[in-house]
Length: 551
Image (tube, rainbow, N blue to C red):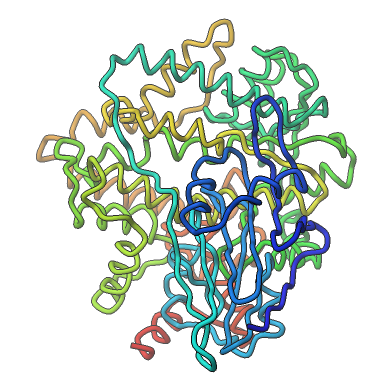
């Protein structure tokens, strides 16, 4: 095999013998970093050995073993160190930046079917990318590429060593509350150990996840904390962030978003370079903090040696969105393929309206969703399967990669809620305690003396929905409310969205496509496909037509 390594020189992999590693792993009371990780893989001789070791590691890592006749490529449980590869007969290209492979590989054609998935999801699921022949190592997997008989292409096989599948413990609610407190303290203590005395920079919103991080840092008496919040001036969540930081005695900076700031930043060469680095071929890069991070860096508002610690990913573990409503049958949660599919379509395949192409698209999407899950019999209920799909597909490909934005601007970054032990705890929590994030939010609200008001605009709506959920009024009320929300958004969203980020496009272009149901990632997925196709204007309908013509 002819092997070509095209790795990012700015974020080097450490090489020892045949092994290359990158990341940070927890070992006892200390972190192992970069070259310290490589010896952990030295004793690996079989794929079973590799799977066993990877499943036991705590932290983030990427690992490659490149030897004559055989290659192993491994990603951690959330693919925090992405690895891409392509194969062409006896040539193999491997990189952490897919653009580098596309510049030299012979197969650079976009797959129309995967373009349709990318359009409605904002990322490509499974081991694929937008481009035929360009693959990604999935979360919690090891890819083996081995020489076959002479003249034949190498064989590729995949070992899945980690899955997010709940195994519920039978214990009273208070037991889980005490255990949650223990695991939160352990998780944040590890984050502090990772910071190693450096300033911690905390994105602080009105949500529970960042608030819990802030409260626990104060509880553990880590004082060198710099908080920042962002949004349009007068944004309610921004004000909550300021109050939380003040009450805890932390520094706080507010970054005000405007449409003109977004337009200037989004159309800059700097943003385009970040997109290439962030692997746009596999997913839409997260831009929520683009303006904030750029201004913090350029104006020196937080220390350059600070470690950004965000609350991202925390909400994916604790229940809430979708696991208690009609899409997952709150009252009948038994594992059922149709329930899971209905949930995933509703909550994830929603960036653009594909109802007009449903007969053509649904069989394709259905197979992609089921292929992305382990055997359904392994799940205790449908919500567990829905959460598993969300974590392996959306969280690992869209949420976790936000750290690339931080590192692009020169900051170190750590995501505490990605800690394996924190995740393992939530895999044991019964469904009843995850409904509406009840265990999680009750725990945070009880954290005296850090009782801080929060911004929860959806609470009244949820209460009304629960009151009419089992009545004949539910369906018509739900339909009316959805129509009202979409109409209101269509009239107001361009100017009044709290992030002001629709300024990335002209008003006329926005209103030509916006129906009230799309969001910023809808426009990003379309814009990225326009860019990658390199043929100017595209519309969602054109993408769906390309899909139909490919069937």
